[in-house]
Length: 168
Image (cartoon, rainbow, N blue to C red; front, side, top):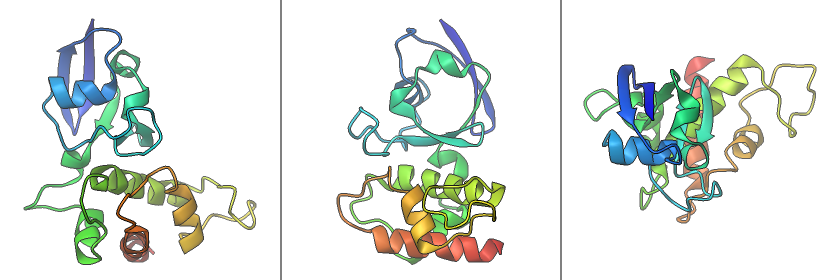
């Protein structure tokens, strides 16, 4: 079935089996291998991408469900010669070790700060009548779907705090 997507700002048209995940479409059909296949069950977050401004596990959704959608992968956030502020902060704060989860962590971190900025509440928010703030516990809770086997969580939180502070 033909699927038309806007991936990292570029219109893409691919023919895929209707059972092909968005993850496999990105990796196998569009050769965007930054997004990683970790558990392939939606439990680790390595495959996190941003679709229409919302972060999703790309292993849990079919490409055909995203006709016309805007998809941002790690490659679309920035490249080595033009890093996104979150990518630069991850480097500065050593927010990665083996690096396997890093693309999903960064995509999720960017979307997390956008969720907070848009006022989307979470269950750790003390007062949901007030706008959420980018506190350590708030960011950690929102990032809990992204697993890092190396345990770089404190460094990831430091990177996110730096970027959140730049926006304040």
